[in-house]
Length: 482
Image (cartoon, rainbow, N blue to C red; front, side, top):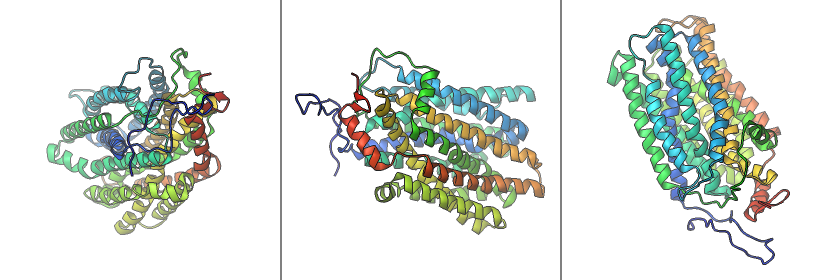
C-alpha cells in the first residue's frame, strides 16, 4: 500500500543528535510521482531518439552528405557534448537559490522547451547551401542541440536521487523511465518514417522536418507532465558556502566513486550497442531484407517486447538483485546477437533473435538508472558532500562517448564497405550492415557482462547500509555538514 509523500523536514529522535533522522528510506513515495518521472524519458526519447535513429539517414540520403562525413559529424559533436556535460552538471550543482519547485525540475523544464525547437532545426537544411555550408550547418545545429540536451538530461537524471532513497522506489522509477524511453523508441521506430512519407512524399527534407516538429511538440508536453507530477522529497544537506565546482571536482567524482566508474565503463558498451542497432535497422531492412517497409514492423515487435520486458524489472531485481539481473540479461543478449550474425539473413529468425537481444539489453539499461542514483548516494557517503549534477554528468559523459562510437561504427562501416546511397548494395556493403547490426552489439554485451560482474561492487545489501547512514546524517567520516 502506498504511503503519503515522504517528509523532508528532519526530526530528532535522540537528545544527543546521534539518531537524528533526516530521511526514512523505508517509506515509499506515491506511485503517481514515480509514473510521472517516467514521462520525462518518454519526452526525452521523442527528441533524442530521432537523432540517434534517423539523422544518419536524413543527412546521407535526404541531404546528400557522404557517409564518412556524417560519421565524423556524429563523432565530433558527441565528444563535444560529452565535455559539455560537466559544465551543465557544475551549473546545476552550483545553484544556490533553490525555490519551492526544487533544484532540478525548473532547469529541466526550461531546457526541454528549448530542446524541442532545436530538435526541429537539426532535421532541416536551408535551401541554396553548398555542400560545405550544409556540413557546417549540420555540425553547428547538432552541437548546440547537444549542449541544451545536457542541461535537460543532467537535472532530469539527478531528480530521481532526490525523489526517494528507497530501493524499491528507485527500481520502480528505473522501470517507468525505461518504459518511457523504449516507448518513445517504439513510437519513433514505428511511426516516424511512415509520417515523413505521408507528409513529404518523395520530398524527404519536407517530410523529416514536419515529422520532427510533431515529435518534438509531444516531447516537450511529456516533460511538462514530469515537471508537474514529481517532487524532490529527500532532505539533503546543502552547503551554501561551498566553493563552485570545476573540472577538478568532476575528475574527483569519477576516480573516487568505484561504482560510478564501473557504470561509466559498462555504459560505453551498452549504449553504443543500442544506438548502433537503432541506426542500422533502417539500412538492414531496406537492403539486407529488401524492403524498408519492414523497418516499422520489426521495430514494433522488437520494442514492444522490450517494453514488456522492462515491466519485469521490479520483480527481477526484488528476487535476484540489480547486479545479477543485469549480468544474466547481458549474456542472453550477447548470445542472441551473435547467433543473428552467423545465421543467414532470414526475416523470421532475424526478428526473433533481434527481439531477444534488444529486450535483454533494455532490462539492464533500465536497471542502470537505479544504479546511478545509488552511486550518487555512495559518493555522498564517501565524501560527505552531495554532488548530484556533476555525478550524473560524469555518467552521462560515457553515454555521449558511446553515442559517438556508435556513429563511427555505423557510418564508418557503411563508408568502409562501399555503401552507395539510394543504390543497389554490393555483397561487402550488405555484410558490413549486418556486422554493425548484430556482431558489434554482441561483442559489446559480452564486455558489459564482464564489467558489471567484476567491477561493480555496490550490491543491494551494501547500498541499504549506506542508505541507513545517510538517513541519519552520517557519511564515512562522521556527521554530514560538520
